[in-house]
Image (cartoon, rainbow, N blue to C red; front, side, top):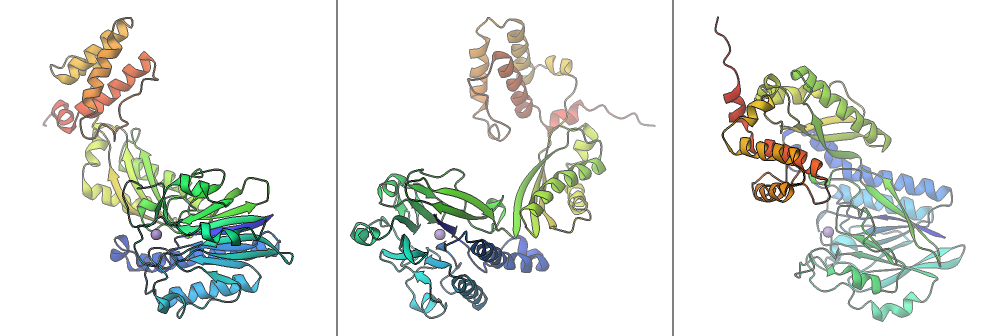
Length: 449
Ligand SMILES: [Mn+2]
């Protein structure tokens, strides 16, 4: 068996924007995060190697964020390669659209590549992993030659077929947009999954898409993105790392995700329907984040940056409080509490809580669209044999065109029973048709004393 650790899109020493601009300490931690993720990956690789469980590391492009990466990024990557190769772990590298091999001053002159390291250039090339003194696996790969490449990256692979026959196993290493925006020539080496699947390899280890393939794009051969080892903003939330790939002739490749992310990003929704005041809301957020922090700690991360959204339908006093930006800011500052390891930053707290409802009889008596619709729903409940379902579905169809309808859970599907459909329809209607003004108007005027 041959085992590879596949990493891609490290974007080493990326300067973070946004959040980092307002918080200098955090900016430094974030800037270190991409490098720390590499260190974690290297430490893991060395440990596996010591147990005889790792043969090679593949780097699927966009190792650097730019064609002129910082000295720090180049040195750390060079050190990583040195440590891996010194232990006999072969390294295979391709350049992506961020760090193409068009500029010899970057890759060939400013990154030191130790022996045992294969850097593929812009034409298809092949390298061999040896095991117990014999060739065990061929790695074919090619790099981007410039930041944009609209040609099918598989062009020219056939001509390398002879090299592919040398070993019992073959894998492909490629930075490309597999099956993504195939409709146009998008400039990021567009290629269909079908074309990849027809190539004579056992596995395609890809780079470019920062989201890990939850399930492989293709099973035989395996076509897979590992995602980037360190998320760079809230849109790259969740566990981040690399893939261990086990290859054996005559068997399907097996993969294992290994977390390397140093700072994790998380979107967290906190239900506050039952919260009586701002203290309760703050505690609810704290509890929700504690769970996420425990997960982050288990994944070996040093920090968690969370974007928290409050949801639910709290009572009027709480709902009113949460309408005030100052209250939200105070809650944001206090919810992190004394959590220190891993560190926690709530980068944003937004409220999507819904206005509280008056008693249902009051809503039913209303002379408006909401009242009408609730009465239709009740009639359907009382008389399930009628054509209520299609009536309700028609109205829901109209609702679906209202902006925000999808956001609040969307329109129920045909698989629902009538009762479920009516309940879901009621909840959609209340979300869409009952708003803040209604809530305020229905609020009793406090008695003046
Ligand atoms: Mn890329």
